[in-house]
Image 1 (cartoon, rainbow, N blue to C red):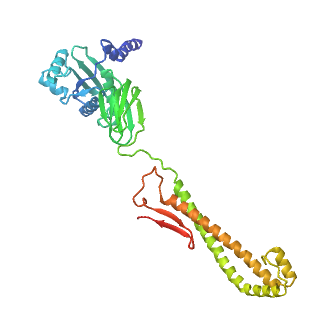
Image 2 (cartoon, one colour; image 1 turned 180 degrees about the vertical axis):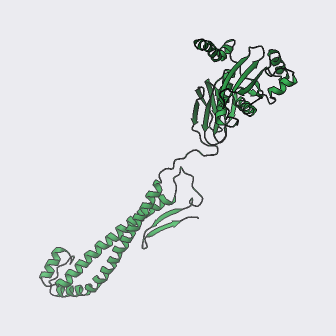
Image 3 (cartoon, rainbow, N blue to C red; image 1 turned 90 degrees about the vertical axis):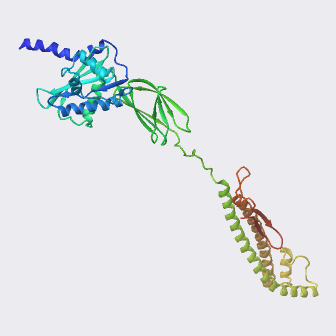
Length: 396
């Protein structure tokens, strides 16, 4: 039992270190053109075909690699070239000549001993280089090349074969077109402002070019299996630059002054109406006041001057020249009429000033702004005289 364990150990180590030893003979292959042959199998051809197709999909996506369109199966080539099922070195050279490719992947697949699994042996042929082989055991349920698990396995196997690793770069720049330039060479178009690019692991210089937004340069480090996202804030094509709207000071102030002017005008009308009413009542008392003045003059009792002054009013009333109801009512109404008249004139003038300034601010524009034709000839002019008012003129 111990002897069997000691024998198994170097075998396991040999299988584990085989890929490392193969690449130790020389550097990893430089990306370029490569062919992926159909994998040959006598027992699990469905699984073999699915893995071969997944490897081709991976080769098409791998950064820097170009898959040959003509990639026949290994079985058809070995049959036509009269080689063994597992071609020797001489036959591998003849396959390369037939494919006209210095690099290709070939392999064989069989059932695993435990059941429910398959064994695959993949080889990378490079002209003038030692054969590089890797082996893998996985579930025989993976027989659809669109299966995410099988695609992940194919990616890992391809990276092991070629000695390369890759990550993903996602660029978002607006919502329009443009392009992403990788390391000054490879160009990837932006579709609706987005691009997803698979890149080899390592440091890269990325330039994002969007029409109307110039060129943006970024430095990124890509790690195997990782995703790096670059989000560039640019205006979408055709989208006008954001424009700030200033506070409408003239409109607010002008409208406010028009409202104030209207209120003052209404107040002026109220006091004007009150003044008219007081003057009517005052005229009714005037006749009686004049009669009292005539009587006082004939009796030499009338005191000259303003009969409604405080001193004359007290003396005339005390002397009986003016009866209190008549004199006091007349003088009170006269004073109220004078006050109402002054207020009506004051509020009216305020209404004209506020309304005029408000209309000017509301219906005109400052000289620095372009004036529309519908407002260019508007004029505001107050009218003073027997008829007070506000004159607005213009072409509409």
